[in-house]
Amino acid sequence: MNKLKCVFTTEQHVDYVLKNLHPRLKNDLLYAVRCGFHLKDEAMKHNSAVTYVYDGIPVAIAKVPNHEDTTIWVFFTKDAINLRFCLHKNVRKILNGLTKEFKFLKTVCRRNNDISLRWLKSLGFEVLDNHIEGNFLYMEKR
Image 1 (tube, helix red, strand yellow):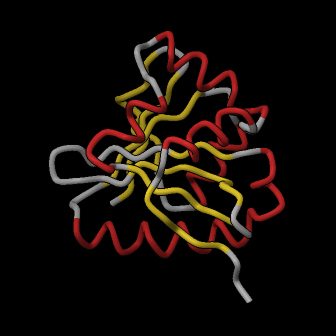
Image 2 (tube, rainbow, N blue to C red):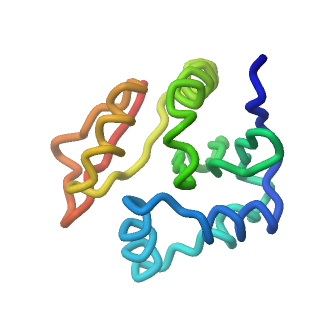
């Protein structure tokens, strides 16, 4: 039985994910904060994020695109690695549905985060060669 559920994000979910963030994502988040990104604010804005919960424990928070902003992002806890196949299957299914509704989805990935880069490519995202800026690669899924 699949115990993975997708629910609307609460502040408690954000707090838990931040305290248990996957080590490879800590540097990404710190860099994003220096650029003005604040996970809690972004997640709570307009109910724009969902939380993946496994057995009642938050394992990931993801931004849901809308017609004004097709940017997506996801932050995983260290426990998410044990659920990577289940999460991948679920996220892929959701993204395929979203690409039917939106012309494209976009995200950014730190150039040196091989794990995130492989994950995004396996979900169908491609690096936009003309949108490489500093440590970030801009990616898109059509």
